[in-house]
Structure formats: structure tokens, C-alpha cells
Length: 221
Image (cartoon, rainbow, N blue to C red; front, side, top):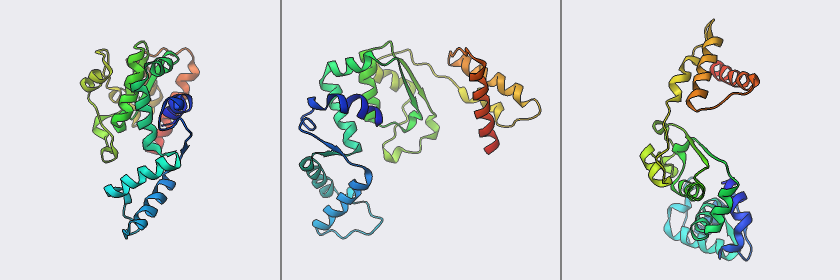
């Protein structure tokens, strides 16, 4: 979300009919307040826990209110960003020219628009390092639009056959239970992970910091 605001909206709003005459970004609190106000105006009596936006007439009126007030919410940030990248080749080329890596954490919670936005940027410069980290078996936000794409789906969307899959979890499982020789096992496991991801560790401090984070996580478990 921040990436879309910083890289797309702030720099290229003048090319959007929706934003070119000014805009204001509203938060979820304001969105919910609008939803309640619209429901009340339409004579709909909702209980405290009921989501106003489950009703189409409220969603339609809400969009009209935003346009009238020159406002966009978090969902529209993605929509406007996708439209700008789709319609303006120079925008995606400009952004892609200054990006060396795209790293997506917990990619199974990424929605379709987010995948598409990243694909526009990557296709504009395929020298960008593309990396997805996550587990399709831990997709817990599907009800909120999260899509756990398989390797073949990602390759088709991003137009590449170079996406490689690594089972990093098995390399660090020995960190779950640390015994007297745990530090040695931990060091070996971390080095295996670095090798899998083709990462060169140039400083011992980097490895030490990663060891510490693993130790802290294991202690908490």
C-alpha cells in the first residue's frame, strides 16, 4: 500500500482523471463513518457489528461520496495505481528503472490487484530480482481477498519461467529445539538457508544477528 502511494500516486496523480484535480486519502475509520452515515440516510437500521458495505446500495453511494469529496480510500489506492500502470507505459518503465528487487513477504495473503501491480513493474524490467516468501498452506486471509498462487500461476502472470521454489522451512527446523549443540546446528541451518537463496554473507555480524533472531523466536515458542 505504501509502495503504491509513494511510487505511483504521489508521483503520477496528474495522469489520473480521478486524482488530477486534487485528492485526499481517508483511513478505515473515516470509511466506516461514511458507511454508517449513508446507511442512516437511506433509512437502514444496522446493528453495531453489521458491516454497511455488504450492501450494494451503500457501496454505490459511498463511491459517489468519495468522488464528490475528492477522496480515495485504501482500496482505491490499488485501483488507481493499477489503472495508471496499465494505461501509461512510461510510468511503469520509470518505476522499474530504479528498482533492483521486489521482495514479497507472506505472498499467500497478496490480493489480485497487488499481484497485477507488481507484474507491470517486473515486466518493464526483467532484470529485477523477484522473490516471494510464504506458504500456500498458511493462507488465512482468503476471505479478505488474499490469493495463494502456485508457482505456475506466478510464472504465467509475471511472464517468466525462472521462478524457483525452495523448501526453506526444512533447513531451519533444527532451530525449533535448541540443545547443548544448538548453536552449531543453528549456524549450519542458517548457512543452508543462505545457500538455498544464493545469498553471500560478507560479514560475520550478519550471521550473528540472524542467529540471535532465531534464538529469540525459539525461546518464545
